View 1: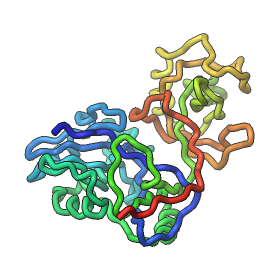
View 2 (view 1 turned 135 degrees about the horizontal axis):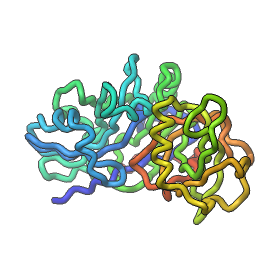
View 3 (view 1 turned 90 degrees about the vertical axis):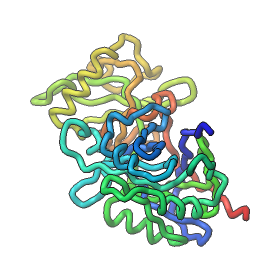
View 4 (view 1 turned 90 degrees about the horizontal axis):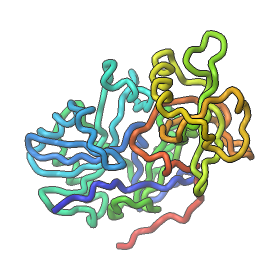
Length: 315
């Protein structure tokens, strides 16, 4: 059986909730990855299907200690001094010592058997038994029913939020469903870099990033990001911009400071945090967190929380 390596996706919702039919897990702040593990060998695949095993050899080695054949779903994270996952720290993988972990929350296949139609809690019980014991691997625990308490704890310890999942739900590869919901404790958004401004004062390489999101067949301006960079990040980003510079403006409408802007082809996806959206669709006080390589630029749209009706048990 050839496994389906497309991850199931969660829908953003507007507030936490309590429900005994649901479980609640930590929303990890990292890169989503599907792992294919057999005794002696393991491989990792990004959300868009790229093999990223060579970048995370320690994780693959830990997974290769498995005694059965399995396909896992989880999040690759870098932990800070307090044990919290931080997306920014993943940017240093391969360049600086980084505490890596693969936080595993689902088991999709086991010894060739497709488990995706099994109830979630049954899959997680099997996952807890088969996952190798290693400091590089973490079984992602959950609580049942108490979503508001889990969310408040996430906010208190400055985590990204919680993921709510229907306890007896199936796994739908490659689909975004209302059986998985994400509730964010802070505002974060994927954006596409479309330009950069000239540096001022002591700043080197560039001043700020002009970013956009996809709106139908066009790019919609989402603001400029001028903080969150150290000297190393400025140099690394500028080096990536140079081969992408273009005279063609990616955005149709006029944006502030165009005369001071160098446009780049909309290829690079960045993660930013911010305080709120303006009525004009721009982010207030955005801060650069890092580049993402696990999602095509054309799939980056503004993420809007939805007060949706939750899925209920079908059992």
